[in-house]
Amino acid sequence: RDLQNFLRCQNNKTNYNLVCETLQFLDCICGSTTGGLGLLGLYINEKNVALINQTLESLTEYCQGPCHENQNCIATHESNGIDIITALILNDINPLGKKRMDLVLELKNNASKLLLAIMESRHDSENAERILYNMRPKELVEVIKKAYMQGEVEFEDGENGEDGAASPRNVGHNIYILAHQLARHNKELQTMLKPGGQVDGDEALEFYAKHTAQIEIVRLDRTMEQIVFPVPSICEFLTKESKLRIYYTTERDEQGSKINDFFLRSEDLFNEMNWQKKLRAQPVLYWCARNMSFWSSISFNLAVLMNLLVAFFYPFKGVRGGPLEPHWSGLLWTAMLISLAIVIALPKPHGIRALIASTILRLIFSVGLQPTLFLLGAFNVCNKIIFLMSFVGNCGTFTRGYRAMVLDVEFLYHLLYLLICAMGLFVHEFFYSLLLFDLVY
Image 1: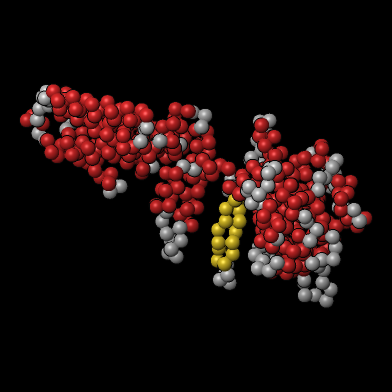
Image 2: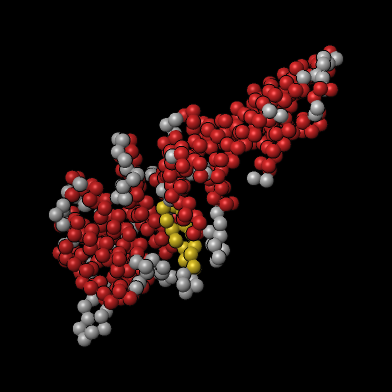
């Protein structure tokens, strides 16, 4: 901040206010001294657009952080600086826009960042009101919708419009955040930004509202500030299991903050989201991965059931299934058929549980307890293999190499769980008792 202030005031006999000089330079190069802000396109071309971008970026650096004195210097300067920056966002810059829309989008992106920097960490409304002075809310909302629709067209044409910083959709998002900040000081703009308030282009506002988040931070002077930021589309691919894992396992530091450990995991999370995006192209693996919680629930319930059977009926030599009396057998078959019909008609959890329970009872009395336990164990092994596929599919573990797989404690735990399932199936039933450690895990 000291260097930012030094650019404005050097405390010498003759001071050179580089902030004002830069703003006046922008004023001159954009031709506003001729009195025509609507004719920006006549002065902005491929030869000087890079210079204008550099000027906007320099002004942003002067006041972001924030430096309130430089913010005020830009906002209250007698030149047309603020009006030019606003016009860069609202106006179509032609003929440059017809030939190089990418350069126009970059200009709009830098202009919106500069206006956000001018309002950063402000608890008053002076700068926001100065920006709103020559900005009609309807025009600003139309620019947001237009940028979104342009991004939709590029997406349909197969162009990668999401990754570039100056892609239409990202530029529209920056302008939406600018509008969101300005809406605190303008009720009309606040109403127009609400999804559902407008008929045309509602999809754009809904998209940006859904992909915009905010947090509150405490500054060094103990003031609380709200930070608004865009949520990248790739975050949609973060699974529920990963969110819960991060929420419950991220460790606190000495100050009780989880931020340090979270950022240590951020690279793995980003790789996982990229993998989840690619996973959509593999339907079978994606289906397995999507139902990971379901496979885990089945595995746990089977472990409890098998342990109950072992606890109550071991050793199995004295336990015979034997034929049931006709009316009991008929009742059991009826229960199976009714529960099956309910599951087919209304696939609810209670109906599925009733079908499973009646089927297991039918198996016990038809083939015996030990063969039924063997079938349950075999099914549990198959289910755990599917679970491992879904776990690896969700996290993309194998894409990180064998070393990462060996060092992944959670993967090794599930691999050991599968080994115990197999030992309970082929060695001895008492190994099933070890599966109950899953309660602790």
